[in-house]
Amino acid sequence: MEIRRIEGVLFQHATEQFQTIKAQKAGEALRIRVLSVVPDVLLDLSLGSTIRAKVSHWEGSIIGLTLPNGVEIRAENKSSIPLMVGDTVDLMVESTNPFVFRVVGLYRKGQGEELLKLIFEKEDNLLVSINMENFKESVENSGIFYERKLFDLFLGKIKVEDLMKDRKAQITGQVLLLAKDLSDMLGIDFEVSLESIKNLLHIFKEKIQNYEKIIEAFKVLSFENMSHEEYLEFIKDLRNYNSFILALDRGDKAIILKELYRLIKSGKLTEYKSVIEALESLQNLEEPVVKEFLKAMEGGSDKDIKRAYSALENYLKEGQRWIEFYNTKLPQLENLLYRLEFLNSLQWTMLKDGKAFYLPIYYEGGKGGIMFKADKDYTVFFKLNYNVGFLAGLLKRPKKHQSLDIRFLTNMAFLAEKLREGKNRLQEMLLEDGIELKSYLVEVVEEGQVLERVKDSFSQEGFLLIV
Image (tube, rainbow, N blue to C red; front, side, top):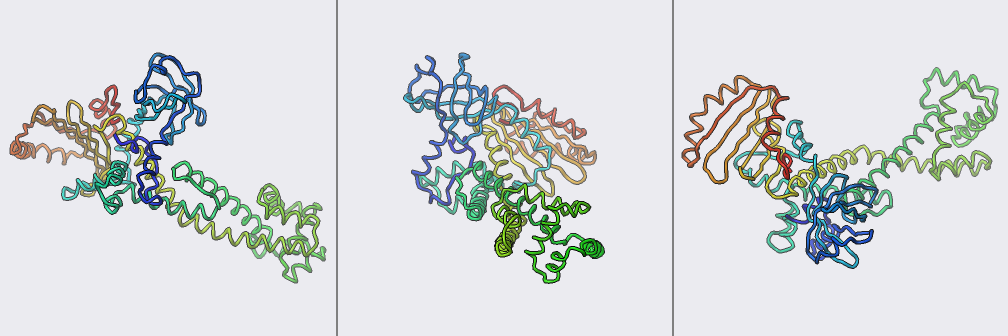
């Protein structure tokens, strides 16, 4: 199992030019350092020995691990794998002074069941065509084998252009480009990891929220939200405040805001709650340019106020550019991050061994998923959703025998009848390849019944559905 598949996070293949020494960082990022007194059970281990532990508690990067003999140790998770309470990890001793493990396997109970449900929810973000002409190529480039290809690249087995055909490589490249744009706009460096890019996204969203609050507040304070009738009534109410009316006549926005600010502070606009609330929303913000503007309004000269207002106008113009970026590119980045995390979760289904995986698929207008598992039997389950109903299939073939058990489940009676009629033809085709049709069952069932039928076939200890 490739160590990068275990990690299941971004790899800086584009910006680091695929240097072998950089690939080594992937392994270094999978470390767990023991913080507590090292118990005897660990002292007896030599370099390269492996041990299985369970995550008992989690607090930031600090985790608790329960060893096989029940001993608890405290450790720092320096890996980029977000370990959770209940996870089982396979750890290899990397050094004994200090005592450091490397994560070589992760088993997340419940992950399998969550992924199994995906096959019953129309997952449209990462669909692989199962057209027989290019099915093998589609699966190979689906993204779930991306890390294997990285190491093949470092070993010179494939070329860069071969790697870039991979779905995960393409998504990663797009994410990195958009993250770089975000980083440049914010003036904040980022690490090449999902968590770091998500943090950029979080900071950017907070910035956008501030821009939107300020823009909305100044729309109110500039009377843009008032209808013509409301504006005339407002001016009529303030006709006795000469300095405000004179500022309006001159069209000097900075001075208009100064006079409005003073009217609000003196309690003369109590009936205009929206105007008062707009000012309060500005006072609650921490943006330096807003604070400087309010400070000038409080006691600065007209020159100070105009200078602060000019800076604020430039700030809001910049905000419009940020909002445009937010509206056009942020949905794309969020979608790409979702797809990348979804791909990582699919890869995690292959952590325990390489014997099972799941793919969202489409075929002749149907969308759904397909799961493979190799144990004592080769087991395949698929489900396709159509506008008129669904078709699911469960196929099993023992490793030691050339026989096949087939079970079709559908809620379309006419399709069930067609499938029953096709049994003899299918049997003839299988015999041509030396395969015996051991059993063939077609059932008409409600969609809610399918999941339970599949669980019976995929659940077992150490595998848990599709993990």
